Length: 387
Image (cartoon, rainbow, N blue to C red; front, side, top):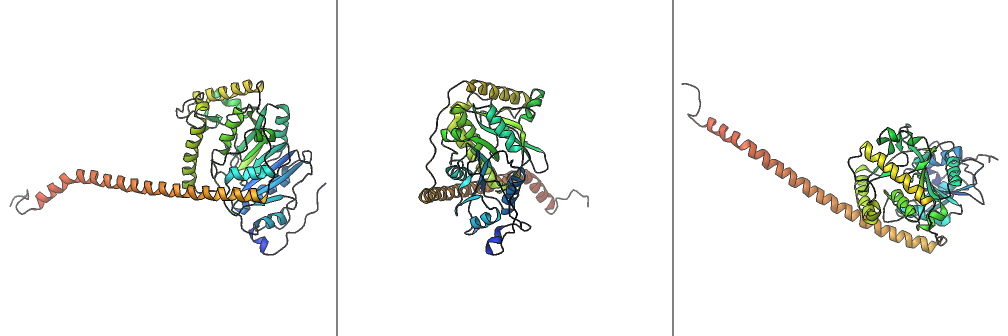
């Protein structure tokens, strides 16, 4: 039964609620949820509220859910503002930057469902998204995570159960040959699925210890989770009927994003190098290598279906002391990351200056003969004209 809407009360808390959001967001909340939806929020408030509106529109009454929003670097009144705008939603706020992994793990400590659905705040689910993922999970108990078709806001495909190469590079399957043509239309194995709208079996999440906070503040969190799940005996599946839209990179600047991506990729390769040895070498993403990578991923899923799966232990319940320790560790990590980034920028500046200097000397070397010739012609009596 739908609850009656009410207006969001005016006052200072309304400041973080985007203009135009005047009616409360009514998201179904169950006392015994099958799925705990965890929304890590680090982007602009308008993205978060658009995400919550999509949950309001498209979560089915047939699947009991709860929604947990984890606010990253939140102002003092942000939690109360979100709770006022979306009554019933559980909000956990941090004044420091937790990053995606710690935000997801904080949500897990509060979750009660058999499944955890990670939904980034810059994503919007479409009709049938959760039903498709839960149906796939019921049909495939051997799988630990399930992702769907992710598109850009204009509907252009962004990612769809990608494949992974030996150097840690990922690539969408539509980069492959005609043999991959049907890979967007069927339930199949994947090397990883994007975490922006990902269903994870809670038992599998606990089996790998949750998300690895080394991948800070984001990037490669989902790739690492998929590798960890397979290492624990769980496969990762792509379900094409589960669709969502994602504003890729909405929560960070491009230069910093590229730097963090490269840094976290190096961390990932160092951690999983032995497992990656069975993957295709990167050849620029040829159609043939993508096809072979997809075939390897599907063969691995077949083997995992009949193998043992590691059991896990649920994390300790959330406490203020545990959250405080987590925030202290996150703050130390954030400071260290920015020092490293600053050093990288300084090195780049020095390298650029050196390259510019080298380019100047090369140009000077080319111009020197011309300058000498001009000097000769400019001397008295050196003109070639007849008197």
